[in-house]
Image (cartoon, rainbow, N blue to C red; front, side, top):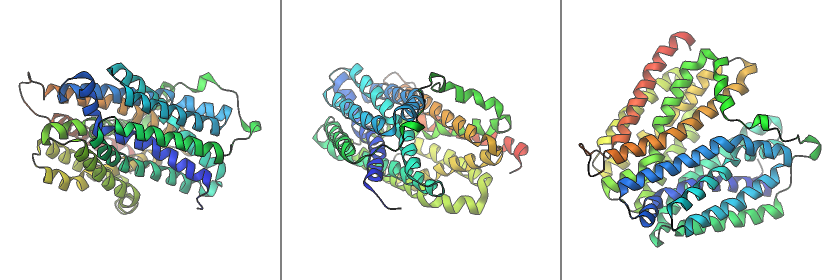
Length: 402
C-alpha cells in the first residue's frame, strides 16, 4: 500500500496514542513521588488509580468519539483530539498537585479513544478488499508506538520526570498542524448521520453477551486472562523500582525490550502458531505457560533472569487471538459484529479492574506494615487468574468441540 500523507498522519496519530501511554510508565513513579512525597509503595496506588481513570475514560467515551466522527466527520475529531492531547501533556508537565495528574490522565483517556476513528478513516479511503491490510497497518503503528514510548520516556526521564511530557506535547501539536494542512475529510456530508445518544452507552455491549450464551465460558476466560495480562503495564514500573532499584532509564529500556518481543510475537509468530496447532491447543498452552511465567516473575530476584524471561512472557499474548478465533467460529455470521463489540467491552472492563487490583496488592505486600514482603504479589495473583481461566477453558471445550 502506498503511504500517502493522510495515511502517514493516521499512522503517526495512532503511534502517538500508544507512545503517550508508554512514555509515562518509566517516569510516573518519580513524578508521583515528587508531587506527593510518598514512597514507591504508596505511589503505586496513585498510579493504579490513574490507570483506572485512563481506561475508564476510554471505555466510557469510545462510543461517543466514534459517533461524533460519524456525525461531524473524521477530520475535526482527529485534529481536535490531538490539540487537546497536547494540552493534557502540558498539564502533566506543570502539575504540582496530584488531582491535576488525574485531570490530565482523564483527558488523555478520552482523546486516546480515537483509535476507532483512525480505523474509520482508513476504511473510508481503502477499497473493501484491502481494508484488512489497512487495519493491520494501524495496529502495527500502535504496537511500534508502545515499543518506542517507554524507551523515549526512560531516556528523557534522565532530564527529570516532566521532560517526556513536554516532548509529547510538542509532537502532538506538530502532528495537529501537519494534519490541518494535509488531512482531507473522507466522510461526505450526505453520508453523515445525526448524533444519536442511544448509541453511546458502553454498558449495552456487555449486556449483549446474553444473546450468545454458547460462548459465555470463553468470554469469561478472555476476561480473566486479560485482567491477569494487564499486570505488566499496571505495576511493572513500581515492581522493578522496588525489587531491582531501576531508575526511569532502566524502566524504559526494560519496557521497550518487552514491547519488542511482544511486537515480534504479534506481528509474526501468531501467523505461524495458530494455523499449525489450532486455536484450542494454542490457547490452552499459552494460558498455562503464562501462569507459570507469572509465578516465576513473582519470585525472581535477578535482573539478568528477568530479561531472559521476557521472550517467554511475550508468548502469552498468543492466547487472546486464539480465544477470539474460537468464539468467532462458535458464532453465526450475522452475529460477528455483536461478538466483537462484546469482546471490546470485556477487554475494556479488564483494563479498568486490573490496575486497581494489582497496585493495591503491590502496596499491601510492600508497605512497612506488611506481614509478608513480596513485591511480586501482583504477578502471583495474575497467575492464579490465568490458572482459573485455564480450568474454565478446559470445561468450555466440551460444549464447543473445536
